[in-house]
Amino acid sequence: MTFEPVAIIDIGSNSVRLVAYDGLQRASTPLYNEKVLCGLGRSVFSTGRLNEDSVQRALTALRRFRVLCDTMRVSRIFVLATAAARDAANGPAFLEAAREALGQEIQLLSGRREAELSALGVVSGFYAPDGVVGDLGGGSLELVDVNGTTVGQGVTMPLGGLALQDLSEGSLKKARKIAREHLKKAEPQLDTLRGRTFYAVGGTWRALARLHQAARQYPLHVMHGYAVKPSDELSFLEMVEQTDAATLQEVESISEARRPLLAFGAVVLEEIIRLGRPREIAISAFGVREGLLFEQLDRETRLADPLIVAAQELNVQRARSPVHGEELRDWTDHFIASLDGPETAGERRLRHAACLLSDIGWRAHPDYRGEQSLNVLANAAFAGIDHPGRAYLALSGYFRHEGVAPEKASPTLRTLAGPRLFERARLVGALMRVAFPVSAGMAGPLKRMPVAVEAGRVVLRLPTEWAELNGERLLSRVRGLGRVVGLDGRVEVV
Image (cartoon, rainbow, N blue to C red):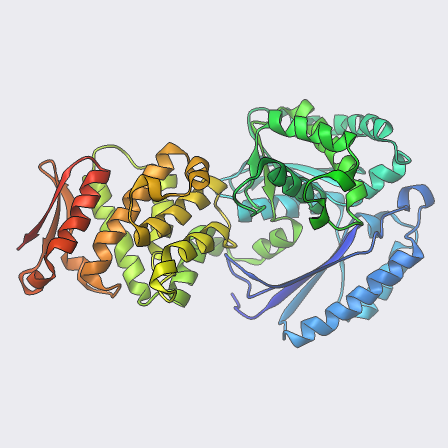
């Protein structure tokens, strides 16, 4: 495994994109991300050829990307090409010119291979995914079943935004008919979708999700893991199809080249929902590129939890004493084990992540540590976490600095977390508020200061040599922890 920068250049039917990552690892972070909308697939189905102006724009972008990769000292470059280059008569000539522009070999993906990599991207980016992945590009739509780390056999159809616009001659009515006809080929995938999650991959669907968030005044602007109910989505998609894109709220955040494709992407997603009847639609920022990187990892690294890996890295980079975060994790394990009532595996991993991230705000001014921690944790580039989980992490970081009174919390984040996770965030925040005054955020002390529920009380035990830490401030924190779990609290020196 290498920690030197790696890059993927994705030559798609609508866009050509460079993404450079900080290394080949389980929780890679993008160092640089640039997209050029070239529209290579704009007229492939009607003319059989890539448009020459689009080809020149793409080659210009690729030459620029080559210089950028040299500047970043990228150790390894993967170059992928998809539907437009695959289907066009002049595709081979374009790929040869692209190879010369980049000085790199290019992998021309089959539809089935594209579906497989998209599914691996979702495996990489979600915690225990279960459903069907749909990757909508400019030229094609790939559908493939995914369950945990198991990826099914994919199917590809010419239903990408540019392809559907071309095939339907710009008519949404024709586009819907074409989509229905092609989706009949995907019955094996859509039949398994009922009651499960549909993972929507691709720039057009992310753009629709951004507009959906704006219409709802949604509190988090992170795309990855944004989930909606099919009934809500259908009414929104119908509105998009019937409305001039220029009048949609927040449409200025969508590139002009992509706006005409929104309605065609909406038609395809609407038909998938009606045919597949999923439980929810989840937006994935992870797709073919992330799937390819995931495939390069060894088995042990692939099985690592990406949220915990990312939390560990942030802990090392930003905490006063990274070992303290690990000890805090174990210290809270002991307390949780003493409580009545189970903690789910999902809640446990969120609590462990919160402990590892508990000290990322310490460099901020004391008046702003809670707010800064909340904003960083709510919007960080985490994988393997949904939006309620993000709200939990953000609230736990906020409570750790600002106190655990429920009224202190952001009402929108409280709603997003839901009642159960909100109370779990208060609990871990209260535990942190006890831990930091007795440890100063340093490694070592927590191992000798257990806190647990004993005989109907929350009890913190201090060693005799640290008896001077006891006082009104610490007792107030312990009693605050007790109130969160409905018990009295006390400090004992032993």
